[in-house]
Length: 573
Image 1: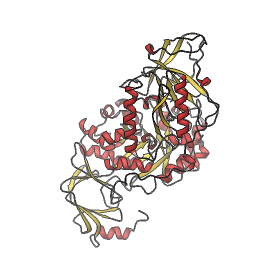
Image 2: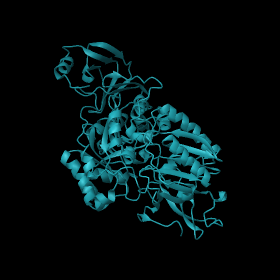
Image 3: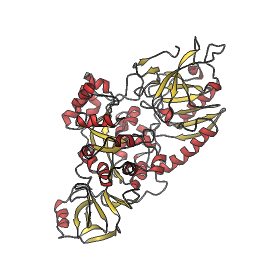
Image 4: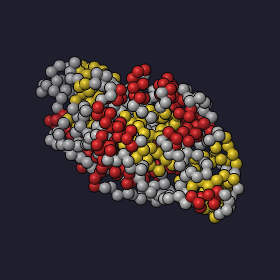
């Protein structure tokens, strides 16, 4: 909107000058008082001038619908939508989301500051307001190779940018509680610039949680129980109630929310893919769930608006009051929260023309640097048949540390036995050309006669591939290299299907509908042609098998990792 002409705004507010737009006939949600009022809403220069009786150059008849402030997603990884920021805006703004607090943790693990700069530049001048938290943990651990290292010095280079609100989720809770110097150096950058620090502290309690909060950690979106929620609020932390594509925490956490603590709660999606947004919604989905769980509709809207704006010090939005940004959502009702119209900065949202694509800057294109890869790297030599296996838990990113007795061939290598539902899993380093390949076995995936490979492998996003035979695994990896990243399925020596993700191997600029259509088709083929279990997301499940901060057993490019013991372990028992 540029610099505000405050006199012009005040003249319109006082009724001396007509507004640019007047929305009439709406029932206005007053999140400050927790009530519904009636009156015209006057808008000028993208700002709300007032509520009352106003003249305007244009009038919009809301016909008794409910007018709410624009919704705010308190924590999201845009990369997890698999689309670029412009396409992401096309997905979420129709659902009433007008502001997001994005953590570019995924692309920064691949591209470092180039990834941060890409998200900043590509999110300018969108109908969606995008604010960023600079990632605090790149890489997430020292037990894998990522594409970049962002230390305190790198963080200091960007944290003063206006749209950077602070330091992103402090995933290294152990290092924070232990007051490790490298963590203290990063925290000091936020302290010195007066910016916020997001949290990520699953399972912390007692003195450890006290130490974490004492570091001025402002939020946490990793609560598992209502007790977790209340413990964090008791320590002055804001709790972000998450409902993503993989993690469904909202209904459970709402059991700990009441009138006395709801002002410390806000909503976030964290990771939400196009199919979830298109079929279920975005923050509007949180509102539906909250009301179903007994939260008063206005209290739910307050969590989606005013609470979030105050948490992140975005005092120019979050309420329909004079002098704030005209981000508005017209709702048909306060139960289903069907969105009728959305205004961002006073402009009625109109979707982009189908096929409009933003260019991909060379700095984030592809990012595939694989060294010394061959079929020999997939050979899994065993001296004994009793081995550790990664057991998939349906509907969860947590795994179990299992064991199995597997066949060994005459060459001393693991051989697949389809009756066991155990297949090979490999993580191939793709950033620094190290040639590293970490090998493991995974059970409960269902895969037969093929392979699935992807460059989405949290958090370092190396290549991860699962398969029941080495030639198909190699073909899947080689196809990914040609695509510049994405997802590939191979069946019986042929590429069954693929989705190219040329932006850092994480995103495409072809839009959310394209991703949704491709995913729908690929999911169907994964079940029908590759026999992957119907209750398992074939791609998202795979992408979390390389995340060495989520229990219990995972694999990185450096080997099999026991998250509980926080060390590498041999495959053989």
